[in-house]
Image (tube, rainbow, N blue to C red):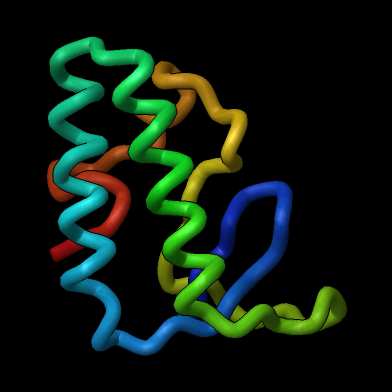
Length: 92
């Protein structure tokens, strides 16, 4: 799976990591629904950090279609709300 972090680039991520990332995504969704700004910021940072740790960066000149697009680390709660589906940022 190819994951794009807006403003950073793309990483290749094994599908086996989705369950772990979905836990963070569920936390992020709950914090957004509760208007928990500090929790949102903490969990978004943790989610992006985990994607960077588990993924393999693609070269900057690689233009692979992204299976998943995540917001930039500095994205606001409102900006992330616009990206959400019913399943959160990560489907499943």
